[in-house]
Length: 353
Image 1 (cartoon, rainbow, N blue to C red):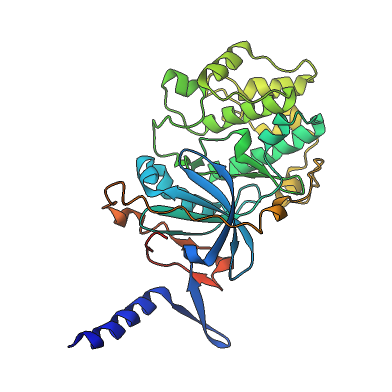
Image 2: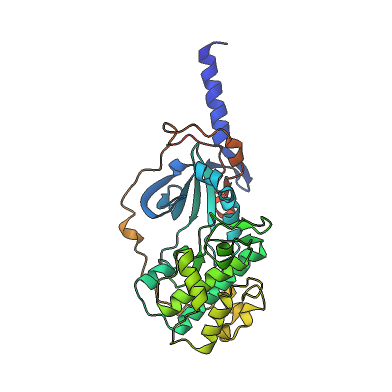
């Protein structure tokens, strides 16, 4: 065989890897691979130790999305990062969690495509010193309860619940995001994540950690003070059990229960939190169905100012470090949600842009 004959065969193999056909009533429909070149990146929405979240536009569906780019080395270091795509798929079943649309990976990065939530975060509300009525706080905390209970019902502990991981829609509803540190509850003894008394003492914890974090967030909302961010701050708060003097008895009792040092007695682990008197006015069935209107008023979507811009995609660091050898660990990372499957399909690993 001469070299001229070899090239068409290589091209045919490449085409077969990245094309996908499925039967429809009209015949055969070809979908595109979900890869980085299908998106235009506009703006960095947030950045942390494990990666960055960017505003992007999908070129086929013409839909604005949030894309989280995570370095594979970080995902390997925190092994739970390899499960984030699975948790994002499960999240589609709850209106109180950020939904995952798909995921793909290159030689050095994993990209998670998620719904775009544009109303800011709970942290923004506290930072802006925006006054929230007790009615509004009750509504927001109740929605967080629904989101946390859904995760726990699926055997998932979030481990990193904090005010800036609670997004707000423009209609004033909450969306829990960032499952990078989430774990299955079967992984006993792992004590990474948001600080709680169990972490301070070195004890293993499970779902109780998320309920303590809810107490920290709620305390920030009702006092108007910035939520505690360090172990020392949390320790001090737990020891003093300080709450706003403007709180009624039900709110104080809720915080006391959520911030209980003994995880076995903590509200959420013991008793039915939905039956707490703080939530007496909440219709849980209506709330979970999304029928309850939020008392929180959010300003209109401000993303319009960014969509005319374009930023570069995170690029490979292969020149600086040894290549990642165990790429087989990432084989199950890729997915495409049902709503996107009419246009996209999963694709094998791409080279970095």
